[in-house]
Length: 373
Ligand SMILES: CO[C@@H]1O[C@H](CNc2nc3cc4c(=O)[nH]c(N)nc4cc3[nH]2)[C@@H](O)[C@H]1O
Image (cartoon, rainbow, N blue to C red; front, side, top):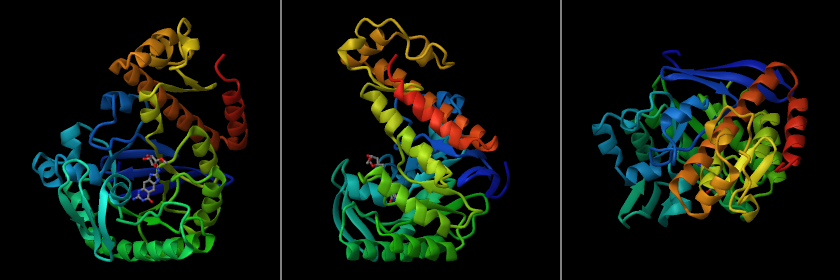
């Protein structure tokens, strides 16, 4: 832990990076997977479990928390860490993406976004400055700039307009954030699937000398190779000594490949959301517990796992819980899936340290093909 925000590169293997982010509330081992705690909870999990599985940091969301319980209320209650009982770092997204994907957007212009809440229909206006103010009220450790994420496919001039405005919003967010040594404000690279716009966005954000950089505008339904092609353009244009965070990514395969393209931090609802719907991630690939073929299978998901959800419960029981829509089904599979994601990240970090990341990637992908033994 340090009084300031520091990123150290500990080892590299090709473009893969093993690093460490140090902050007053704790150290983040990278490459890192950040469980998503959108409305102040990693759904169906106790945060003690989330920590025990190896998470050094979790995500919160400005959009959801400003609507309910309200940013000023969270501040009155002592900030998000006290409210949810998580004393390690929290990264908050700025709200722009969620406004586009969740609310009925009324207006988007240079000043910011005006939208109606998906909770109660109330009208809100959020400027870049208000987004940073909200993240401050939440006492967020890593705050994201407000940006405009354009859904793909999109017209090039639309992608350019949104990217340029996001750059201007980055400057406004930097000014609003000011100088907070123990915290960080990350810029977000936009530019859609257009290499020259991606490079322009990354180089312009680099000139702002921010503490870290996110790659946005991806994981919005584009093919994996398009995502990876954009990383090939974006990562080299970002400073090597700052952390890189790929927003909303992804499947285990997305993560393996994005690490090989130079990404340090990830977040995704996949392990928890798909767990609630019956999907289990294991060393040998995915298992859909809704499928009737599990109805009398007495084996656990993986008897060699140290995670009780993975080692101690039969597939038959998990199938029954999911089919019965019982809460315990989503709880056990969220637990299994987050355990698997953190085990994967630990394996990734070790493989980079030992200079064998290419072999680790190949072995891991080979094991996934073994399927549901
Ligand atoms: C395709 O699956 C859906 O999409 C989400 C994951 N994909 C994703 N891409 C993102 C991009 C941005 C961005 O450009 N800017 C900001 N501020 N935040 C972002 C957050 C993002 N999350 C899941 O929620 C899932 O519902």
